[in-house]
Image (tube, rainbow, N blue to C red; front, side, top):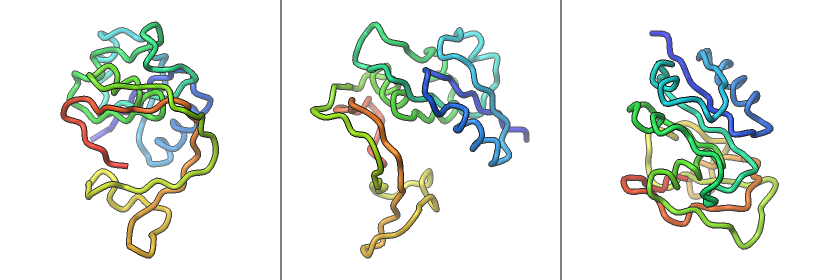
Length: 153
């Protein structure tokens, strides 16, 4: 089966890197601007969607949104930074400005057990928790998850 990933670009500086990593995993992907039509999203035939980051703030009602069809396809959706924040906001969660902006190296731990993060780790703590080394750059945060969502990392 030929898998196909749709990457919607909200203006992140690393969208090309995301596409390269997907392609290195031998999965076909295409980058398109975030403001494509619902019809385009449905016709694309994606097996998954990635929403990129952005310098925008998802809590501002005037900022860019993902096409609603993304959330109606029944396929996995990965939101990275702003992509995750706009997904949360659009689906009934809450995003707010953080008290401080965070930029730089961080370590993230999976919460609970989930197949999605199984085997994805850079190292293990003495307690046996799988950890990821990440680079962060954000000033906003999701303060309330949308209905049906659960905290994983």
